[in-house]
Image 1: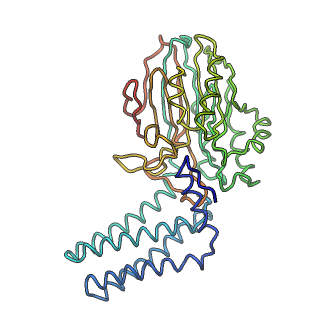
Image 2: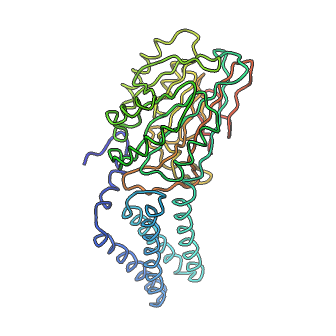
Image 3: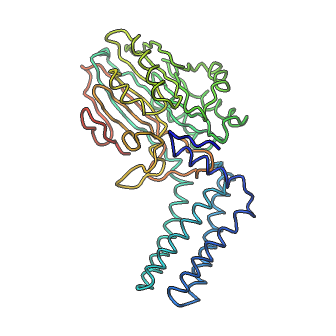
Length: 410
């Protein structure tokens, strides 16, 4: 197993596949061990065997309910990841909480028991909400940009960005997406990579479901796309589908688009996980942009932002981070899969004369990672482009500091 040195999070995701291949009889004893240790510690700490048995029994009951939750998700058509890795994660988490509460119980037994019960219930509520509710609460992120390079047309150029679909099977999220996109009345649709889940990126049914979904998107100015990370998107499988559907992949090339009275230059760079090489290809494309043309960069990851800003790119649309997928209120993303961590985690940023919007995306990580979103709902992005006589720049959420990136938290 090769550990990707440039992305530790990716390495951790690969490790989650190990328990995914283990049968239940091999992983189930973990819950017995965790419950036994926690129960023994509680019995020793409180000098009451009955409390030890109660804690151990409670942990085993919670382990059973957690298993039932994760095992039911595919049956309900909500998500299709393996059960063992997220289940083991919750078993260990609940055990650690019980051990911490046992330490408190040395002096405040009743307080520790109450806190333990409340935290365990809270974990259950978050697990249910994060797997069955929030992944289907798709929101619309909005950004309005004005530029002297754009025509002072009566109507703005409306761009809809769809990112990180990570299709496994069609769920109600994907089925509702075409109507949501159509309702935004896009002049142009851009797709910024990671179309299939890593676990299903060669699966025939997943490919068929993705084809159906993409076939529902329509825009008068066309649909343009870039590839996502190399271990997720396989261009040799997706190119024929895109050609059949009339979607134009921008594989390290530029094209000019004129729609709604506006003319802009689209630059598409393939994400190869190498910032030096990807940055050089961006420089080559930017060198061919006519003077005074409005430039829109499509690249899967936000990590090219410093390079894009140095080149004077006008607008950069990216995804990849999922906004962290699970966010801590008041702090935001803990993990982002970006080499800049939280610098470009989600939302709108401005650096120099370059605007960047990082979409939280629609799907969730593959491998053995839990198919869960917490305080980070899926997102479709609507960008309105105006001439300078039409409006001033607006964003949803906190404004970024000029010439310095700050997060626009959802």
